Amino acid sequence: MIPNCERSAIALGSNMGNSEKILAAAINILAKTPGIVLQAKSSLYQTKAVGPPQPDYLNGCVILQVEMPPQQLLNTLLAIEQKFGRVRRERWGPRSLDLDLLLYDDLIWNTPTLQIPHPRMRERAFVLVPLAEIAPDWLEPVSGCAIKDLVKEVDCSDVHLLQGA
Ligand SMILES: Nc1ncnc2c1ncn2[C@@H]1O[C@H](COP(=O)(O)OP(=O)(O)OP(=O)(O)O)[C@@H](O)[C@H]1O
Ligand SMILES: Nc1nc2c(c(=O)[nH]1)N=C(CO)CN2
Image (cartoon, rainbow, N blue to C red; front, side):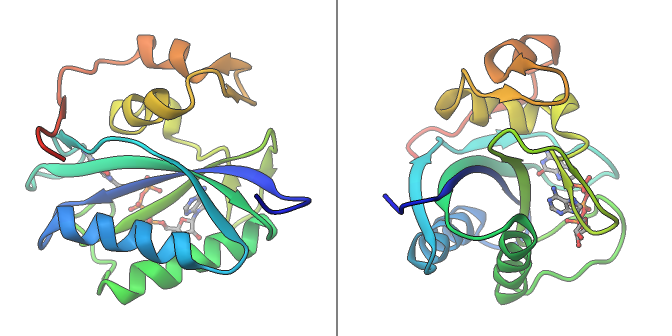
């Protein structure tokens, strides 16, 4: 536990390369980053890609205790994406690693480079299913709804628990 720290939820996704290995390695790096303590880790889910046709994703979420402001946390996430050779080509296109900052306590934050809560999290079953597993009672601050209730509003039929993960 870090004194004066905030709780943050991060979504992880990958559909290029050895996604299981990449997600495990990314979580490991996050857990070893100064100012970050890994509090909880969801199962991994195989999910049908939303967006242009592309391979299925592996998705998961983690809860972190962080002792850094939101923009610094985003910069940390972008640096980890780069380590795994993330190249931005098309919007919502395939990627070796995607890390999205979903929630930062009950903060609502809107700048050109960072929006919290993540603006599309409420419509994404591939985010809400793993997040509900580890943070069901966390209130998404824009809607005021708990994650366990938001997950009931989306179609979860394309999100499957990865066996043996
Ligand atoms: N909450 C957030 N988490 C991550 N990135 C964010 C957030 N809010 C704004 N951004 C900005 O979005 C930029 C582009 O993100 P990215 O390329 O990962 O989008 P995407 O994964 O293709 O689509 P989506 O944002 O719908 O998940 C980042 O460089 C970052 O500046
Ligand atoms: N199933 C799934 N589809 C996606 C994902 C993702 O992580 N999982 N990420 C996207 C861009 O952030 C676009 N589409």
